[in-house]
Length: 598
Image 1 (cartoon, one colour):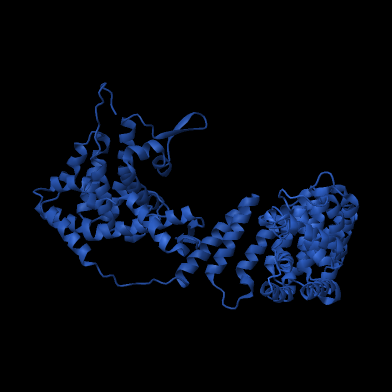
Image 2 (tube, rainbow, N blue to C red):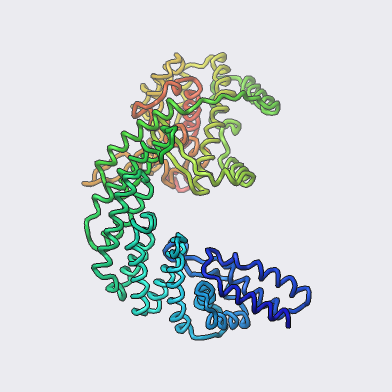
């Protein structure tokens, strides 16, 4: 009997609390009493105390404060509550005089979606909304300044009124929101103009209830948003300035008013932030570039073409300044593992023992030691990400020559970016430790432009019109004039590849306006399924990474546009191109059983 009386006293004390920010702060006396009830094995009191604790410690959500994740007010597990527990909440909802507790019990009952039966939900709704509005008033009373809590209650009340289509209660809810908005700028900070305005906008989205937002309330919301926009711009709180501008855009769309100037102002706010950098003392070009990138994305989204072109220039300048002044070249000594050293020596010994240059050139096209196994590398990256899961979650950008050429935020994007990084690193090692020494072996055995050209002359897809250019390219290669060699050989490699596919009846062109045929952009051509299938995954990835991948070497495109760095025109990269030629010249025209080419 004593435990039951103490339980009633604890409940009475809870009911007498005026306002608390977190209901869970009322739970300590309940926990203490539960411990005593457990000791005395009073299961009834233990259950009642647990019911109260479960209600106090629930995490609620708001359809305005959590717009991206909101589906229901309460967690799904309340649907598993027992009949006894729901009956207890129904009794507390009807008897409690504390509006916070009353709204919590009502929220549980109204959001319950299980199979148990209890009091009519409409009656609960009619009593819950006034309690929510009362809590909203309490949250802002006597300088409590719990504005987000108040907004949450207003949000819930409005949501329920829209769901149950109860105009008189919705009118009360809207009046409370209007009163709150009226105090913005005088009583409340301009920070709190956004969510109440969003709630009113949600009402306007409801075709059956939107007339509840009259002209006077609309003008009040627009006025307060406009005041907030000017205020945060003057205060240089540009994040809030952009947020308010976005709210104004949403309102103007709903009211069918112009939004172009507001969209441009949001973009300008990003540009101003690029200079202000949220007030930080030590400003950097990297942070500047980040905000300019956001401005560019915004201008692209709103179709501001002139600003897009302007931002391209600003952004490139910022990235170049960042590379010049803030990036650091980090050099780390690398120790070659003995096992790898022995592998290199075995491969090179094998090439030394080949009897002629012709046999070495043949081996270059087929040797599995000189082609990266793409599937194995992807598996290696999967294993790495499993061990270092954080690395797969951190957004990564790639900056090259003043341009952001890639950004990975999702797992698959991160994996692809890491693949390209490791693939290029392996290509570097392969060229330095294998291809360049093999070139020395071939020179010692009498390598000539004629022996290289003969591979082309014997190729099934030989085209006489290319012979002179390819010969010249090989001659410049052997003369160590890698600038001339690569400027000739890389376009000719692409041309030879197109010749091969044309010969097997795979078109290399696309039809453009007017039924004119144009050679398909090389990168797009390589992305075609039939091209990938014909080349095979390993050779296709090799060509793609070296020639056209933005996150690879992209040599073909950089040379074509005059953007290639001088480091490209060296034996290390030239040997890669030579090996690609050897692989390409290894493809043969096979006669099918029916006599057709395949």
